[in-house]
Length: 378
Image (cartoon, rainbow, N blue to C red):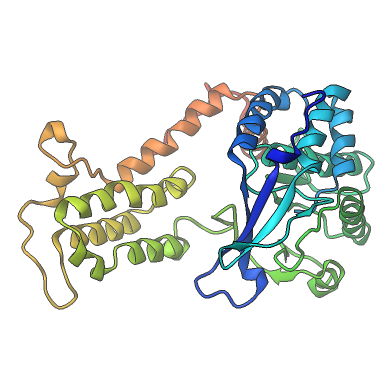
């Protein structure tokens, strides 16, 4: 790319996509960049090269900060020059009712839709991870200590979602606020404290309102949602599954039966609903009552049952759940799917010896080896 100007390929159209059904303010829209196809080819090549070394290298991102992060990881001047071409040269036009405005340049931020943006984002967020780890090592921040081995847990990160486990001590909470502020100033990121929540766990002497005012966030309680899953609830209770039941009920609304044949209903039951359930079932064991309730909704939707009228069920549900080789439709039983998805954790426990989650399980339940414990459930 030396001697070549990619700015002509780097023009972008910006459009707003609503995040909610009835948007009422700009905060209800997500800006999406329509990136040039030729630039995407170029960015994809760099992305594939960068992805290979990410594991080794450990909307308002400051470009100089990103360049410093790349330099700190060990990328050379030539590579960083390519990256600078990709992130500094773009021009943007906003689509207003389908018509582009006059183009303008951007001084900071990453474009949603650029194949390189997710990797750049991870590199910048890694700086926050290093700050928190350093603060923990220096005892500026104290998290949760598990087991006799003293495994220290202060935070977990997944892309732009971070959860912190902080001891309710004034110095620890204030230091976390300082770290976050330093990260904002250095990186250009703006942490969305309006969407952030503070949760008290156990007996805490200090009033939560004090820390809520410090972070300017919202106060919440267990259970709360993290990465789309309930955090801190009891999966053995039916109430725990209310959110997934409501989503399934919405997908299987009675009015949809009028527009679908039985083949179409079967596709909806097997493939669309399975994607809703898989995430939950791969983490939590579903109670029998919840599994039966879901299967009842599936059964009524397939046969076209209405509230005031029950259709004739020509074949029993047990037969329909069998695989096609056994004269069924391959729908499958909910509990069987759940047990199959949970079984992978036994395999992962035996293979991912250095994994952080495995260390937590061993520390909490005093497990020294997989051979000495029966990890199979009934």
